[in-house]
Amino acid sequence: MNDLKNCIKQYRQIDDEIRDLNKQVYEKRDARKTVEQEIAVIIRDPQFNAIKKIKLEEDGSTISFKRPNEWVKPWSLSQKELKELATQYFGIAGEFNAENLVKFIIDTRKQSLVATEFSFTRTVPGEQDE
View 1: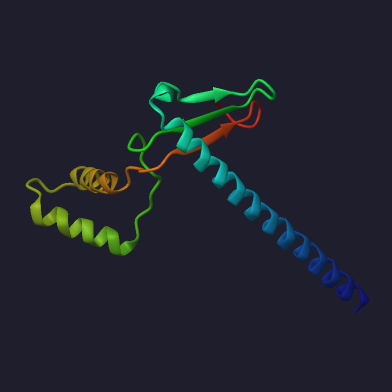
View 2: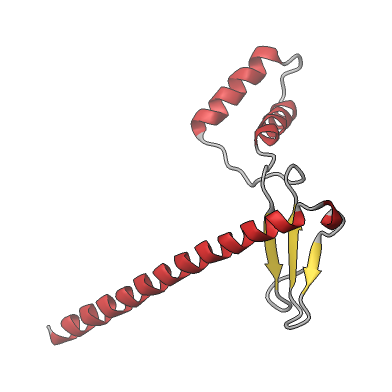
């Protein structure tokens, strides 16, 4: 019984630590988002139009950014949305086949997912491919 109590106590302690760390991560993400918004205001200026990324000499990392209307957000499709798109396709399509259906779904979804905001990505050497 003592073994179980000790394990439960350890579990609770680790879980509390994870909760605290998650809270800190959320706070840091909010702070990063605020800085991203400040960067977006600055790089909207036409003098920065040609800049797509900035290399940081301090650590060799690179911050890349995509401008509004230049990238498509990642997406998923619910069963309801899939049914709606398939219904639209079969209502207007001339030649029915799987390839045309997939193309129709992708083209239709892309139109609504073109980003209207900046996107920022930091790449650190050794962590992932640049």
